Structures are given as C-alpha cells and as structure tokens.
Length: 424
Image (cartoon, rainbow, N blue to C red):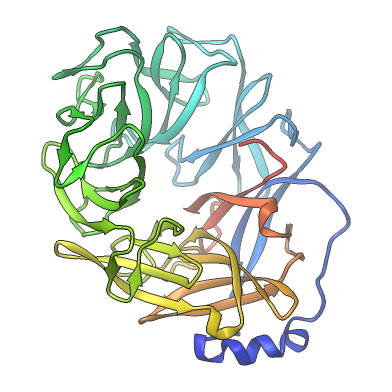
C-alpha cells in the first residue's frame, strides 16, 4: 500500500488496523545484513549473526569492523571488506548465501606492503579505471592502493610518507590525511582528496600507475570560489549535482555550506550562510545532510532533516533550491533520523529510510520524492522482524553501503546494514 503525504495523517490514526502488532523473531544478535524491497516492503534478504561461521570467517560483533563496500572482483556484484584482530576478509553473496571470498592474516606481505593490524582502511573506489574497486590503506610508513583478488591482494601503487613527499606538481607537508574519495573529474576513475597541515588537494593514478596531483594545492586561509578554506571544514562527496559527470563536494563549517566541483577546473554549485533560504528551505546548523538522486532526474540532490521536517535541495545554475519537502509537525509526527538506502526498487529514485514517532508508536517509513512532496512507500512499526532482519530502534543499526547489487540474479538492489553493537 502506498501512502501519500495528504493521506498520511489518516493512515497513522489507523495504525493498529493497518500494521497490527510488532513481529519479533527469537533473540539472535544480528551483526550485518542485506536489505531490499520486495512487494513494496523493505525486508531483510541475508543476515550474518554473532557466532556465524562463513566459510571459515567467524562473525563476532565485538571485534568485526564492517566496510567499505565495492565490486572488488569486477563481476558486477558488490562485496564488503571485513576486519578482525586476526586479519582481513572479503564477504559477498553467491545468489544463495553469504560467502567469504578471501581472507588473510595481519603480518601478510602483499607484494612490498606488509599488512598490519594498525593499518587504516579509508575507503574504496576504482582508481585505475579497470572496472574493479580497490581499497586505500595508510600506515605510519605510507599509503597503498590495494587490489583485492582471489590469488592474493596486490598493491597497485605504494607511496612512502616524507616531510616533503611529492604528488606530481605539489608537495605534501608531513603525513597526508585522506579526506574523501570521489570521481571529481568525470574520467570514471576515483580521485583522493588529501590534506596536510598547510592545505589540501586531489591526487589520482595516472596511466603509469603512479599517484600524481589532479588539482593545484588549495591552501588554508585562501578562497575557493568564495569559500574560505579551513582545516576544520567538514568535506563530503555528494555525487553529481549539476549533471556534468563530475562528483561534487559539500563543504560545511560553522558559517554555512557550499557545494563545489573542484580540480583544475572549479565550479560553484551553490550554498550560503546558515539562515539562508533556498526556495522554501532555510538551511540551519542543526540540519542533517545526506545525498542521492531523490527524484530520478539523473542528478544528485541533498536530502536534509531539520526540526521542521525533511526536504531535498537540487542544483539550478549558480545556486541550490528546494525541490521536495514534508512538514512533519502538521501530521503530529516527530522524526528521529534519516538514512539513505539508494535505489533499491530500480525506479531510478533513491529511497530514504526514516524513523518516526507518532501517537505512541515508533515507526519506520521508506519515502521517495513525488513532485514537490514525498510519497511514503512503506510504513511499519519498530521493532519488527521482516525477512531476515529485525528492524529495531534506529539507534541500533545503520546503513553502511546502499544502492548496490550484492546478490547476483536478484531483481533490485540491496543496502548493507550494520548493527550499532558492531564496530565499523
């Protein structure tokens, strides 16, 4: 059943009739799982429980770190990296069940890189354009781009730290810090935004397999298209908001927000100080901001939550404007959080998972943009067991990897969810 915003209040008044009582499975400690949409309902497709053994990998909520996700073998299906005090593994799904595709202990040499328990995995992306994702690892010694393959992980490049290490046209001052991974120039290869104590810049792999600069170095205190760059800025990749094929970056500070394309060619997408109006939305420092293609136009939007309600901001030339919104107070609702699921039902629009409180009920709703408002596709009480995942209160699990084909042969995409009792 699909509820639209003008019918939502009536639907909520009939919650006991429509939803019944929560259905809770026997107590098992879920660690991570895959959720998808079937018959317009959000359900668990596969779940790993505490103590499960997946082809030799022991699932342990106390010490398993989940993520990042990526298509590491290039087969079109996503996998997830998992770590423990023992080592590293990659877990995928073969269409029937979860499978461990590789596992290696700490202390193993991957080519010239010695994989250590203190190494930090920052994320995944296709850095060389071969159709397979790699992971970025740093240590006190340096950095590597590591390909995860069944015959043994292979470092594509190794870069040692130094006081004056160079990235092609500019130097890093001290140990670099990885800020984000995104395709900022539209070449279908991921770049890495790194910073040091003087500024930041983009690096990527060239055709020779070396890490080189993909932008000038932007120094703190200088302006990038009206934005005063600070080491305290929060930076997030928000996808391609203006349709030019380049991933854009959201800058946030105590002053406000700004979305920009940066590299050797910089473009201001839009932004402003807290208190600014973007169409019908006023941006505040209490806003939670996610991103995804909410309306199916092939461009990413900002998905925002505030004490007023929820809304999406899209790009028009030179600025941002509100495209869809839902005032929750008029419906007797309070919201406790939103998470981006991705386009799980393949209608080209990202679904949003929202937790709500209304008339004594704790609820989950999946929403999509519908014109200038939001349509509620699914509404259910929490905690409720659906399929293989117990959708318990929102402070108990989070969406780590959305919008991916994890299960070969299944229609639709899946999102990876991780219990908050698990470190990740």
